[in-house]
Image (tube, helix red, strand yellow):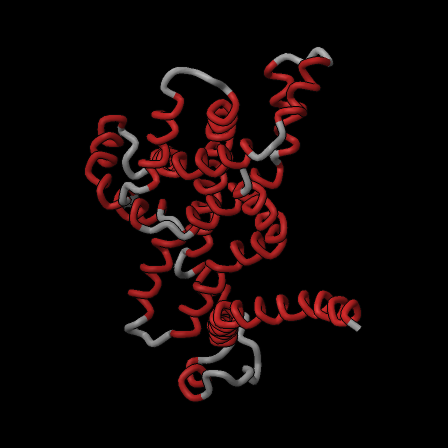
Length: 293
């Protein structure tokens, strides 16, 4: 009888543990669930508004459009130059994101593997760079680009994008490379690989989840970036999509063309939603792997 009670208690312990964990995590799940519902609802409301007429937007916010007004998208892309702004953003953000990875990944690998004097101080310097507020660098950035004659240019904007994104990306990739086992490097060196061959053929393929994570985070942030673009870009034909959307909002609020504004917002969020939807699982895997050291 005693042994039966012991067995029964041992069998019930995991059940009580799971129940306790569920109760403990319930508030977090509730908050995340409510936030998810709010986010999906807001996106759905914007997309529905983009397909309606002005009257339908004002009278029936959540109902389906009687006839989808696809012309709203064509109007803001052509008449309001949102198509040009989309191309400008795609050029600046794509070039900047690949340049960020090209610079930060080798630097992160060196910081995570090499031993040299000042390594800790250099790592802390990148960490400090993460905490610098963007508005604090407006004047130095503008003066530097003016000296280089790169103000009001997408090239100058891309350079600044790379500079402000390096601290976080280096920090992220340093943690990821540090989580990879050193035995793989040792085995590759024993097989006759040089240091550069170990990096390119062994460690870099293993770091693919971290690379995708860094790519998605930087792309989404730069795609929606507004403050630096407003400081550097002056010409209307060189505006990014964030600047163009703000100009569209100012122009359409006097005409009450809310479907056009909703169409512009939809065009802006579609690339980030598609990117995150396709690569979200790999992004989460990269973040969790880099967090374990």
